[in-house]
Amino acid sequence: MVMSKEKEPKEKSTKKEPKMTLKEKRAAKMAKREEKSHA
Image (cartoon, rainbow, N blue to C red; front, side, top):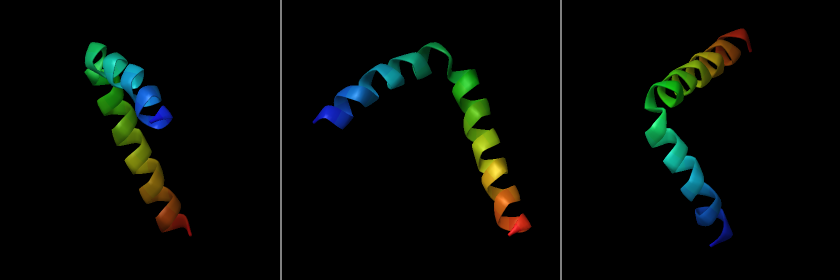
């Protein structure tokens, strides 16, 4: 229950700046791919 409550405010900020979240998600995916290829 506490986790869902903490996620609520995060979703609101995502709706306000969807472009930022999309860019962050892409960067995270790229970073994960790079880490896998390096390992």
